[in-house]
Structure formats: C-alpha cells, structure tokens
Length: 234
Image (cartoon, rainbow, N blue to C red; front, top):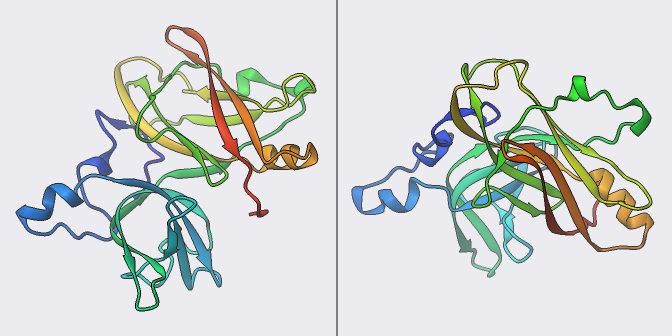
C-alpha cells in the first residue's frame, strides 16, 4: 500500500500496520502501531537485499526481512522500527511495519516553457510536523488539501526554478483537476533532489538553503530548509 493517494482525516499507516505487521500484545501495541521514523529503502543487488537509511548515524540492513519489498526502486517510507546490533556490533534495523511514500524526482523544465496550467496552481497546506523533512537527498512533505473524491486524479510536482539569483528555489505545483473543494485530507509525498545536488556540486557547496514556494489557502507561502547535499549520484 502506498500513501500516494490522499486519505481522509489521517494517513492510514498512522492507525494500521501494513506490509510487515507485528501488531503484538496489548502491552506493545501502542509502541508499534504508530510510525516512529521516515526512512529510505535502498535496494542492493537489484532488490535481492536492501539497506534502511534512518539518519546519518543509523542505517543498515533489516534484521527480519531479506528481499526489498519495492524491488529495484529506492523509495521513502514511513515505518515503525527499532535499532538492533548484530554480534559484531553493526547496525541492523528491525521493521515492525512500513508503508511506502509516493517517491518521484523533482523536475527542472525550461523556465520559458513553464506551463502552469499543466502543472497546476491549486492550493494546499504544508504541515509543519512529522512527515515534513529534508534529508538523504529528499524533500519529504506532509500536506493537506480539500477534496471531494479521494480516488480522483491529481498531480503534484516539485519544480526546480534555478536562477543565478535564486539557485535553490523550489516551487510545489499542485493540479487537483477540478477536485479542490470539500473535506480536508492529508497525504505524504517525497521528491528526490538530484537536480539540486548537481547545482550545489557545481557551485562547490555541501550545504545549501532551499527556498520552497507554494500556493496555500491563505495566499502564497514560502519556507526555508537546510539541506545537506547527497554525496552519491542515486
């Protein structure tokens, strides 16, 4: 199950275990039912194995799952995990459950060719809390927006509007395809910042400040994020 769709009220995985259920006894239920991390699932050997990236200090293979559940694709996921050590003291990650987040690349179209009607100018809110984070080469966003039909088509893109004056400007474009009224619902989406990495490396930067712009229900908004450039090219 992916959280790519918008879900009424709260994200489904905040209340249910999926993929790798370890919904244990009542004593441990409250500890495992809610997500305690946002991770990157990094496949190895075409998905025959995988590493779990939790943060710069905590990462390693899963101790209770061998094969990547997402095949060859690297994805972000919400999860309930605990850190373990093997007999050699190496990190391993025990996964109670995890649920993939829709993961896609940020794009950098030519500014002169920007078709805002295509990309969309519908409104949404970015939630400043669990789910919104910049790490491991990704901008992961928790958002909410008004909808009538949870199954209706909708598109979201992160556009890199690079310029000499604003080299790390990002615009979140949302196209609800007409379904932008009704109840508020929330969701998660993750964008790989490969283009930002390329620009930063070209400028000799390892740490940059991202400027995110979006259209909210209160008008145009922006927020700044400190971003550490990902060193690999994935």
